[in-house]
Length: 146
Image 1 (tube, rainbow, N blue to C red):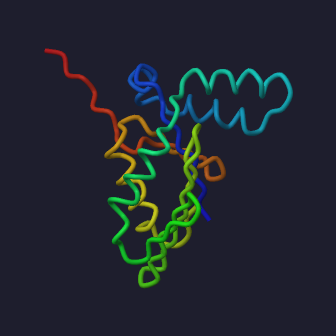
Image 2: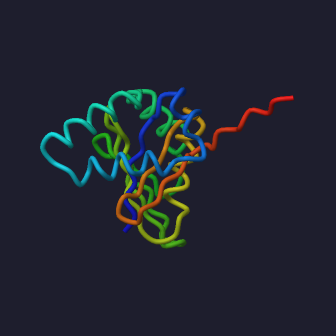
C-alpha cells in the first residue's frame, strides 16, 4: 500500500526549494521519526513553511469533478475511488493541515485525486515516507531570465 501526505507549501518556499525537494523530505521524515524537543522544533518549522488547506474548497472540487465518476464514493468527509476493472483503489481524507491518500493497485485511482488537487493549488507536495518518495503535484516552472 502507498501512503501519501500532501502538504500545501507557502509559495516563497516552494519557489526557493524547487529542485531540492529532498530538504522537505528530510524535515518531514525527521518530524515523523522524532519525539520530545526535536519533534516540537520540526513541528514549528512545518507550520512555518505550510499553508492551511481550504477544506471546504477541496470538498467542493472533489464532489464537482469526481462525483459522476464510476467507482467514486464520498463517506463522512473521506473519498474513495475503486476502479475494479483496473484493480486500482485510493482513499483520500482532507484535514486542515494536510491531505492523506492511501492507494493500492495501479495508479489510476490516486492519479484522479491528484489531478483535481493540482488544478486547485500550485504548491501541493506529496510525501511517501515509507517508500522515501517526494514530488510536486504540479511542478513549478522555472523562471527564464533573458
